[in-house]
Structures are given as C-alpha cells and as structure tokens.
Image (tube, rainbow, N blue to C red):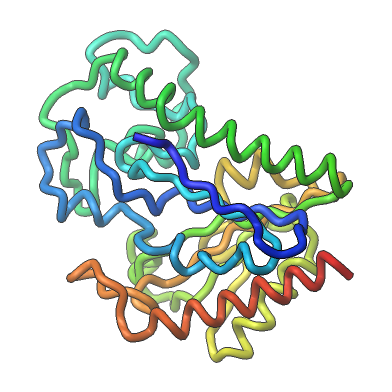
Length: 277
C-alpha cells in the first residue's frame, strides 16, 4: 500500500502545502481488528481530501494519507503510545499524552463509546512496521514539501485539514457549547500569524458558515512541528463539521458537499492571493 497520494500544483506555484492526514480509506490486510469496517470508518476524516482537491489550481500542493488513522495516526508523536497494548516492552521512548489516555494515541485502542479495536495485544514488530511503512513516509513527504517551499520562496504556508464530529463538545464533556462550522487552530498564535487566520476565515463567513479560532481544537503534532511564524512558516489546522458535507450514517457525501467544497476553494484562492501579494 502506498502511504500517501501527492497532487502537485497545476498553476504558478505558491508556497502552500495542504495535508490531509486522516482521510485514508485503504485498510491494510494485517490490521486484524475485532471491529467491523463500518465501525472503523467512524475514525476517518472521510472525503476531506476531495473537499480540497482543487488546491492544485491555485498553485498549492496537496498531500493525502492513504492509510486510516485508526491503523496509525500521523498526527501524533512516535512516543505517544500505550505500552499496555503491546505483547512486549516498547524499545523506544514512551510519553503518553491525553490522547493516548482517551484511546486515540499513535495506535488507537478504542473507537467512540469505549469500543475496543483489538481483542489481542499487538506485537512490537507490527507497530514498528506501521511506523516504517506509513508514518515515516508520510512525515518525510510532508517535511520535504515544507522545506522545499521555504528554500525556494523564503516563506511558506501549511494547512493541516480535518473534519470534526458534530458532537465534539459533548465528547469533550461540554455538551452545552455550540460547535462552529469551521474551527481554525494555530496553537493560540504559536503556529501562524493572525493575518493568515483572518484571510482563511473571511471567505467562509461570507459563504454563510460560522468560524471559530482555536476552540475547541487548537492543533496537534503536525502544526506543532511545522509552524513558526517568526521564521515565516505559517501552519493552521482546519476542521469542518462533518454534517455540513457528509451523511455520517451512510458514510457518503450529502447535499451540502458541493457548497462546502466551493467555499473551501474560495478560501484557498484568497490565501493564494495573500501569499502572492
């Protein structure tokens, strides 16, 4: 299985890299989960790469993972692992985060509602194989794209794109809060400048969508590693509410898909103009 698909720009190149780390739908034969595919697919940011597929026409590059995040999550650190899932001691560093405590670390342990993904312990060798065949190639490809853009242009932008469940606040134990249609996260200003957030937000709001900044999602590993506005490296995590573009029950795009895709394309065009100004 190829770890990722890369769509290069077809217009004059701008230093804009978009990565969709959680939209992969190719489930490896060695997964051996005790859950059916219908349950495992709940973990996907399904069709997000299709929402951004026109990015190449604005001079951007799109990188999309092919493997599913429930197999291994590229938006986690390699030490964000639960040793209790393994049949032997992990040979590397272990620093389990809150994500691992929730069962959604580097290797997911559970789906929503505490449904266990495995009825066995994983071998150290199979986890190492997932890192070798999926995680590392994805990170290497993204790093090369980001470094090349910076070397060529002296600055660069990175969008890390996702979808979020409509009940995200409830999952966080805050059921009374209202989830925005889009959430733009830049680690409270640590991974991008404020101007980039505003450029992204304006077209979405003009299209009738609500937009929040860093609430409830600020960003995780991929923008932590790539964002450094002092060095002209701007990285933003973008979340879209799933019901806006897909039917979660049938796992298919819904009647709102085209509208959401158009708004995102308008957003990308605005960012490309901002970059080129």
